[in-house]
Amino acid sequence: MSRTTFYDKLIFDKSRDGRRAFAQSPADPGEVDLPAGFLRDAPPALPEVSELQVVRHFTRLSQKNFSIDTHFYPLGSCTMKYNPRACNTLALLPGFTGRHPYAPVEHGQGYLESMFELQEMLKAVTGMKAVSLTPMAGAQGELAGVAMIRAYHDARGDTERREIIVPDAAHGTNPATANMCGCVVREIPTGPEGDIDIDALAAALGPRTAGIMLTNPSTLGVFERRIQEVAELVHDAGGLLYYDGANLNAILGKVRPGDMDFDVIHMNLHKTFSTPHGGGGPGSGAVGVGDRLLPFLPIPLVKRVEREGEAHYAWSGEEDLPQSIGRLSGFMGNAGVNLRAYIYMRLVGREGMRRIGEYATLNANYLQARLREAGFELAFPTRRASHEFIVTLKHEARDFDLTAMDLAKALLDENYHAPTTYFPLLVPECLLIEPTETESKETLDGFVDAMIRIANQARQNGVRYKEAPYDMPVRRLDDVKAARQLDLRFEPEDPGTGEASAA
Amino acid sequence: MSELPGDLKYTEEHEWLRREEDGSVTVGITDHAQAALGDLVYVELPEVGQDVEAGGEMAVVESVKAASDVYAPVGGSVVAVNDELGDDPEKINADPYGDGWIVRLSPEAFDEAALLTPDAYQELLDKLDD
Image (cartoon, rainbow over all chains, first blue to last red; front, side, top):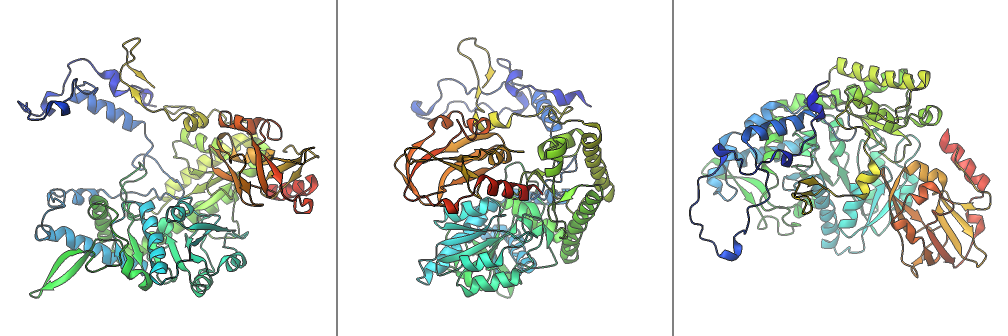
């Protein structure tokens, strides 16, 4: 193992008075014409370091990371697939990066055409009637989706519809979104094979139902088999269906939410359409709608108009959609993420889209079959996996004191990023495993071998992994302290000692 | 194997209740619930005097793994809350049936038949453990 992994300096530790990166310094601005009240009394407490020190510091920090570029990353529900370099290269063409959002549309026809085509491709792949690219992330896409559902009912004078039905397996963002939109959440249970409890759904529906939020395949890694029945029941009760696009990777090119009769969908473009993600942003939560919600889409959209026989692209705003729920961002979403998604879709093409769904599912089922063969218990043994599946360690935890967290930490020492642990909450001691379509069979086999090694050490040799990981830059983290003492501020100088300290 | 005092009643949502001599009811979460949640980091308590519906949300317990609602096993008004959980939510992990109690209610009605006996709750746990 490389010594760099033990590097634990803060950039402030490197700071020396007066040291500067001269090559990077702006020219002396001379006299600054600002009122005295707006000028600093003292320079800001920034680290004073050379350019080379900065490069080394951040390169070393990056080497401590687990990332998709360095490790298999089967983090369930997160779709950590390869992000093709070409997407990044092309999105950084100066014609894109140099475009100012306030520039006249005539100067950005290439960008607008790309975004128009992205809208069209997303419509085609989801089976929806129109798409808006403006939500800045998945959560904002959800917010837009439920806000449209509310706007739809309100526009019909049906103002009592304030209940959003959410299965107990849902992503936590679903009830949070419903709440943010002023709706009340009604939770319905899941059956033993992972499908929604249809009787409970029927009982929950009524004149107060605004809609239902579903992920299909669900967070349990299985496809909701009675989706048509669900759609009919909800529509008959006057509610609408919201599709949480979190697991869209599983069905790309195979099944379309529009064909399942969903009224609105949000897509995590950063995830399904392969922009680097997982670091807190930026994202893109494009929304697609069916006929019922067309008038309520968030603005702006990009429209194509014929002008003297030629295609011309322009913003479509309130004048086209007077009932729109409005703007969600200053311009139109995260342009860079939308561009990368556009390039990815153009590279992959229609045939490739189908391959994504097929190989994401094949890889998950291969991994599931091999782990089952090795003695791991599946949460839904009678079901085929979608793009992910759940292993439960409840017996290992009880009999060998090997919890999901212990196994996850032990995997780090084997150089695999851990799967998602303890989600969904319905399954005790669970690991949610999503290999994605971009991994080779050899990588999957290596992961299975590591899982078997760890489990055998616990089962046969009594090895306990309570202290794991052993070989990482940091050992087992104190989750309780992390949750209770959210103190991340760097104190530049301790008045008592005059020394820098990390608080 | 989780601990299960014989003098308490239980719910399917893993709360326990104890009928006090003054007629009030003390509520907490079971040993099984605290073990499943893991180390608790935060407890959100109701206000004293607040009315709660049977089956309604009464408190929230948050652990390193998850946030979970605590439901009122009986309807009534809140007569006391365990303020010490504010600084020491881990009391619930350490002593779920004692120092880790959460809320004391003055029940409007007390329907024992709707609650689980220790045996019935044990049966539920056995089923979960299969």
